Image (cartoon, protein in one colour):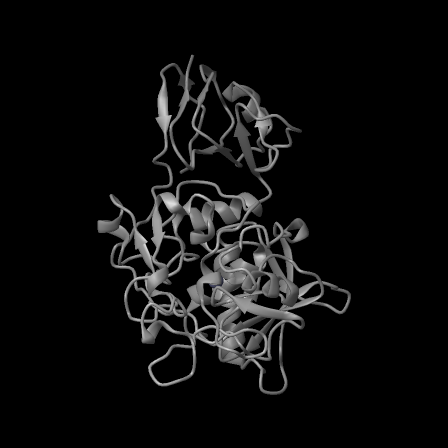
Length: 367
Ligand SMILES: [Zn+2]
C-alpha cells in the first residue's frame, strides 16, 4: 500500500491491514512434495539430507541421528548472501544436466523471489567463489544458507515453481516452518505415525515386507525418521506461526501408516489441518521474511524499543518513538516497515511519499 503522508495526522490510526495475508483455502497442495529416500550421491560434496530436502554436513547428520530427536542446536545460524547477491549456474553435462526448459523454470523461480525481496540472482562468473548450482536429480533438496563454494540445489519437480522456490529459500537461509522453537503451541508431532516408531509392523523401519524405509543413514541402512522433526535452536522467527508458508511440511510427511504425523492444534485445525504444506504460492510471511533478510534498497525498519546500532535494517532498525524521526531516514518513495506493534508519536505534517507497512499489525501513530 502506498501511503502518501502529505496529510496532517491528527488522529490515532491503526495499521495492520496493509498487506492482508493471502490465505487461500483452495491452495493446491502436494502432500508428498519430496521424494522419500535421502540416500543419494548427487548432493553438495560432504553433505547428506535431513527433513526430506535439507542438506547438512555429514558430521552434523551423524550427531543428529545418533541421539534421537535432538536436532536443536545441531545447526548453526544460516549465513546470508552478502548484499543479497546470489550467483547461480547449472550442471550442463552428464546425468545431472539441466535442460534448457528446466533452466528457464529455475530462472522463473528466481525471478519470482526477486520480485518480492531484494535478492539479486545473476549468472555466476569465474571469479564467484560462492554460488548455487542447479542440478537435475531424482530429488529436491538444498543446503541451508550460504555454505561456501559451489552448493548444489537438486531439483526433480521442475514443473512446480513453488517447489523450486522452496529449495532456493533453503539456500537463502530459511528453515522449515515447523522447525520453529514455538511450534509446539501450534502443531503436535505424532511420533507413533512416523516411519521407524515401531508401534506397528508397518511403522518399523526396514526393508522386509510390510516395513517402511523412508530414512537411511549414510551407510544406506533404514533408520527411524523422527530426527526430521526437530526444532532449530538459534533460529530466528518473525511474525506469527505461518501455517500457510511454503516452507511448512504437509500433514503426512514421513508417515508410515497414512495417518498424520503433524496435527494442527485447536483452534487452528479446522482451517489448516488439510492446508499445511501448500506448494502453490508465497504466503504473506514467506514474502515479508525474505524481504526482511534481503531488503530492497529503499526498505527501512523501525522498532521503538530496540537497543543496538540503528541502521534501519531489520536486524538493526531505527530506534525512535516518533514517526518523524523514522521518516527522516527513509528515502523518498521507499518503504518503512514498523517491526512490532507499538505506539509512536505521529502528529504533524509529513510530506515525504513513503509506504508504511506494519507486518504484524497493532501499530498506532498519534500522541
Ligand atoms: Zn525443505
